[in-house]
Amino acid sequence: MSTATRPTLEQLRQIDLLADLGDSAVQSFADAAAMHDAAPGERISEYGHPGRLILLLEGELEILMPDGEIESPTGRQIAPTWIGAIPTLLGSPNAVTLRAESNVRYAVIGAEAFIELTLANRPVFNRAMAQMKPVLANISRRQQQRDRMESLGTMAAGLAHELNNPAAAARRTASELADALGVLSRAIGVFVESGTEREQAARLVALQSSALDRCAARTAMSPLDAADREDELSDTLAALGVPEPWTLSAPLAAAGIDSGFLHEVADAAGEISVPVLRWITASLSARQLTNELAQSTEQMSQLVKAIKTYAYMDRGEIVQVDLREGLETTLTILGHKLKHTTIEVKRDYDPALGPVMVHGAELNQVWTNLLDNAIDALGESGTITITTRADGDCAEVDIADDGPGVPDQIRERVFDPFFTTKDVGSGTGLGLDTARRILVERHRGSLTLESRPGHTVFRARLPVQAASH
Image (cartoon, rainbow, N blue to C red; front, side, top):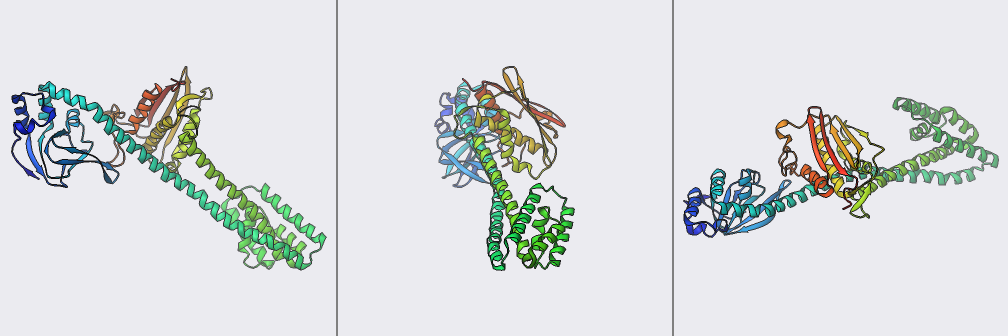
């Protein structure tokens, strides 16, 4: 990038920001400006850097916005035009990056000089202010969309992981169940070939039923007791002539079977004791595997239900909800973030708080942002306390954590758009701003913060009929 001299009055007259100024005023801008040239691909302004006014005199610039580890094109600026006035006047960092699409010539005025010139020239101030609202709204809309997509992507990845566990368990269980059913189907042939008498068959069936009853009535054993039981049963099975006895000992131990029962089966079965023991073991395995399969599919069903409830699918935009349902659903959605921590979640739900009329899916974004912030604040351990209460015609929800708290110097800024304490690329600073907007603008409520070390509370307050008008 090469630096030239100052821009001329004729060049600056092309810029509509200065269109209402006289020659002397335009000259003051020229005196404060420095000319630059840039080749295609060169970056002339970086996201997150301090703002400055750029007067594009020739060429075309591409607007880039960070999207994780990449940059996404979001538009173009074609000469003659001006860029950067709003963040410069607000003292905010650049919200975008500018990259030359062609050979460009531009002038730059530093922040301090531009602020002084703007305050001294009311027409420039008026033009800049006229552009502030739509520009900020556009940037905010893009950032909020990106923030929502990031949150959605994070939740989708977590839910995919949560769904994969019961799905994998269901596949494994189905395979093992098929093996057990194969043993059961072959048992009839063994009984027929051995010439089992009616009385003996009835006794064996009674023993099978007894084993199933024991399985249903069993109590959980400690891992050490279970291991000892398996060793005992394995020795007994080996003594009874069962090949590879360890393949039967685990399901028998899990079902609450003891060595005495195995001897009873062997006495009743006689020469066919080995296939009978395998038949009874397969019956127990099939019962246990069926229960495991039901649990896995129920877990998947609950996760799908949580997703559907979270988004309020198949229901109108305005819904009457129990706030506890939305909070619990959000905890389910964020379960992947809590799974590998020792964070404890305490609930204190007011039974007197009835249904609330809200924009359901939007309100769940509030709980997501507040709970996600609390989890991030705690890290690996701590306590999150969720409290709901009725207060006249309003409902209040407190989401508290016992983390380090919000420092005094940033407490007043936590609800500001784009303000974040996270690393670059880890957040846009719109989570709390979005939560506040949803509560204030969509539900006629409020969102406040109280914080000190060991006690941080975000309090959401909204009318019971918040979304009824």
